[in-house]
Image (cartoon, rainbow, N blue to C red; front, side):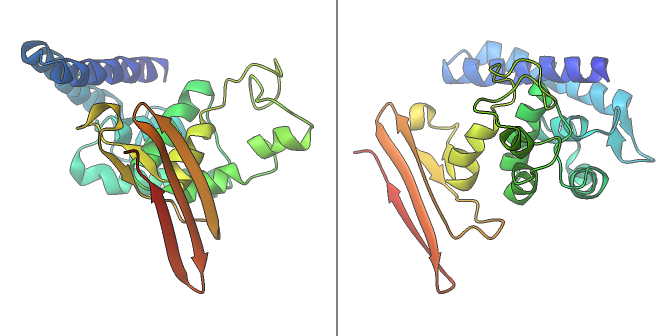
Length: 226
């Protein structure tokens, strides 16, 4: 498991480096990082995918989310791996999250990327261990170091915060237009929610998403910077 997660982290940085180099106009560097990433991705698929079970490494939530997020999983297997991840969350873990600090970040990032806000909602609304609701139920006023406690002002599991703006509010950056010169608004209408308001202060000004459902119709108001 450790070898897989560590190499996934390395792949993530290679992919980031390739994107950054392309934006900066360093096409040679971008191609070099892209080639390294492609090679590592192929090796990770060969070494860690279990075709009999349709899982990677230990089969826990982050080990299924990372291959999807980083596109280690070939296109023809994505649907099956996502189905396994869904079953792991809803059935095996009974709607609860089963990830630590780093795994939680990548798990939520992947589920938002694949428009599975419904699965995040299931985990975010739990009130029993392990969950953010369990922390609240025990009187937490900050996010703890781990689901069971540790430091009570460690903020290790705060990546859920991005979901309220990106997932529920639906304010996404467009990687083709850095700095929010162009952005996407795609609200996550899930879990019986009837309204949500979110805003993000971009370098161009406030971006806001304000939606509500009335009489079966969805109304969306978007604030766009001048």
